[in-house]
Amino acid sequence: MAQAFENPLLGNEVIAEINNGSCLTVQFNKDNKEVLKVVHEILANGFLKVTQYGFKENGEAFKNIEIYHKQLSVLPYASSAGSVAIRPTKEGIIKHKALSAMEDQTNMQLNQIKEQIELLARQAQEIKKRKELSLMIYEAKITFKPQIGQIYHVYEKTDGSHVLSLVAPSEWGGGSGPFAGFVATVKLLADHTWIEV
Image (cartoon, rainbow, N blue to C red):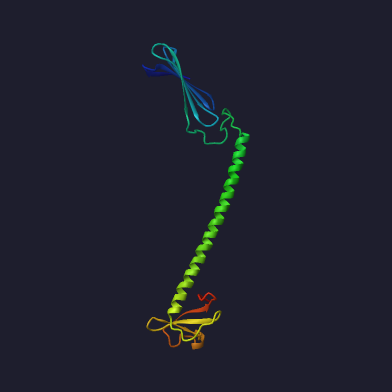
């Protein structure tokens, strides 16, 4: 399609033609003579190839080709009937399968590591809690020798200190007996740490 074009340096007529879904030609004429022809073509790999045909001021013909490496095609397939057919190669299929398998495998391993980290974090919290409880009990008043595997009860006195007792809160008649409050029911483990039961 030809249209008037007012640029005295470039020409006075422009013709644009869509060759197919991936090629556009723009031609600049001056006094019905071709001055410059620019062909824009999207290559199969999605890059843009711009080819310029023209004449220098001295009349010498020139051809300039530029490739723009930014991928213009975002679709993995041709999007119109006139587009360049893009077919997967054997190499592309092999790479795609390998990348999919690699991604699945690494994601599975990362999830396993994440689960292990979460388990270790929970175990660390439990050990920290056992340590804090054990420190509190060993700082408490103990009037007997605790036996491994036996159940005991920790109470808080009015002065803020703690007492380890054989008597459960229910045996005091539902309260904390002569103490300010009940803290926890605990069990002595073989490593001499205490856990709340």
